[in-house]
Image (tube, rainbow, N blue to C red):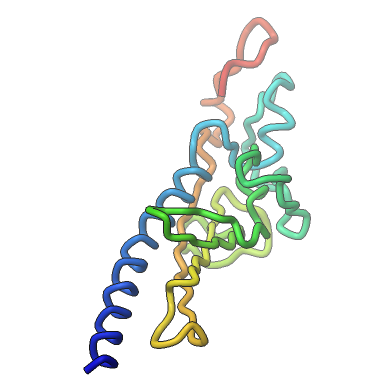
Length: 172
């Protein structure tokens, strides 16, 4: 009877933790997609350079995937690829600890198939784990993967790019 009670409690804990995983994933995706995080390092580096002003009509100017470098901190990344390669990012939700690994790759904006070259779409994959997220024993941990695609959020047709007539860059 004790084993049955323990097993029931473990299932309740697993259900509680897996419910929290969705919240953790949404929180991380919202953090990556918030205002102030640019689609690419190119946008950050050129946002005050007239006439491009951080805008482009070609994905070729974006950082190649092989050149992605993780930012110094989860809180401090100024662009999406800066999150690539971050591991064991600690997130606590209702006193339950989670660890999040983040990977960023280019995908075709239409088919969402992986792309070997820069495109106007980046897929962010999260792998979320917790010491409380396991089946039967901690020796069989469960990892949850979540994915979201972020697209370049500026017009890509030159005629629609709002250049300033005074030689200064308009706000992005």
